[in-house]
Length: 238
Image 1 (cartoon, one colour):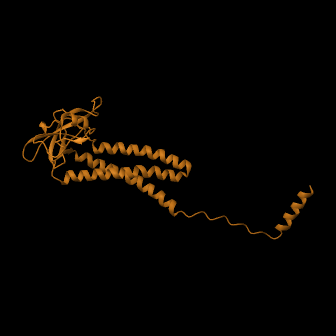
Image 2 (cartoon, one colour):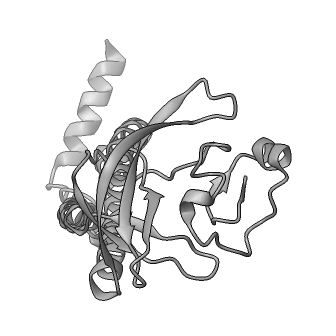
Image 3 (tube, helix red, strand yellow):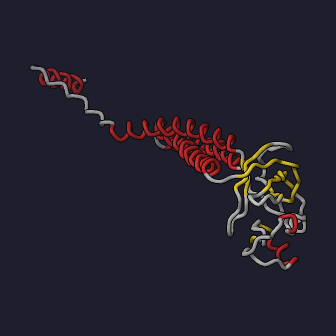
């Protein structure tokens, strides 16, 4: 996979077929770009909040499976700790990513845009598998009307309002909905805090737990030795 002149990724076969150079220049109008005209199928990245949801539920399943194995072979508390830490770390990681993306779109210069259609684009080189990608229209700082492909699996519909971060040298423009990013950051931080705090509590409890002290040996009473010898003699005589 390598980018074309508009900065969007393309399939290597299409790059060789159309003899397009690597990134280095941007088209003055994205409508003139071969990727926008449909010559080469673009590869749209999945929307961040969708990635977050999929990664979190996958981490829950993986943590459940690994925790069950660890608990079966070692101790129940160790398995519970593993089952809590795995989704907690994943949720904290993606919550931080959503927060960083939200801050980038709220603190930096962005432009208003709108989804004009949802287009089916190929997911593989042969085009046998497709996925939906929103097409976003916006006006740049110079008043020129442009279009770009939004993230895949975003759930955006025609008419939805989005924010567009203008592209820079070597980086194409991209669109996001800050409300979705804020909601994803809050949800993942809540879930991540719950899993991590509970898992860390089990870790600290196992590390700081004192080994059980041995049971005290009862002191021998006077006459115990004589009674034992008599019992042994009686057993031998029988």
